[in-house]
Length: 57
Image 1 (cartoon, rainbow, N blue to C red):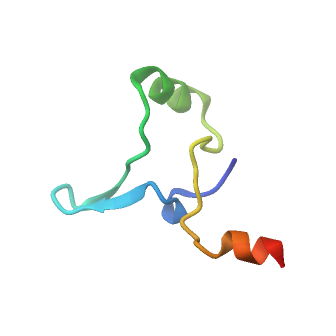
Image 2 (spheres, rainbow, N blue to C red):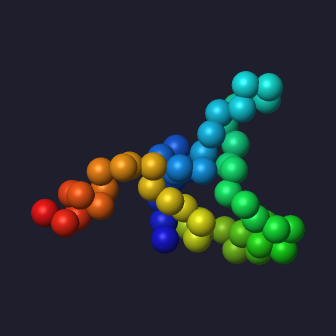
């Protein structure tokens, strides 16, 4: 999968930190592999609710 953090459903704004953070549930090993590998995020999910509908047309 690919995509940018800006349109990912896991990207949420944290008022206390005053920045966007990723809320995908990753254990320590998954997080480490993601940082080491680079490239597209395998946990990306589109925040576009209408993506499936457009795909069906």
